[in-house]
Image (tube, rainbow, N blue to C red; front, side, top):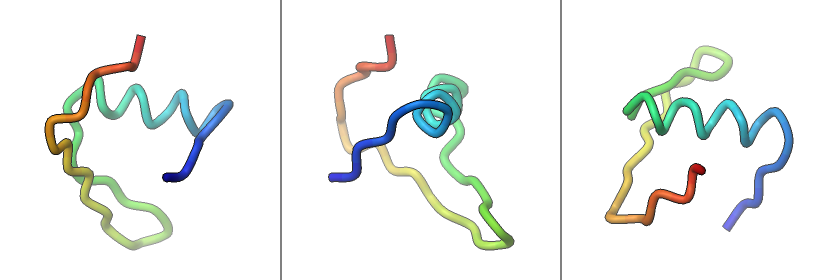
Length: 42
């Protein structure tokens, strides 16, 4: 497990809230799969 803090955590939480499942970093596409994880984005 990778623990994110600060700005990176804030950005990722916002993407999850918006329902984004595909994102791009430096020209590479990444896919986020939520396999029944609890929503702890409060």
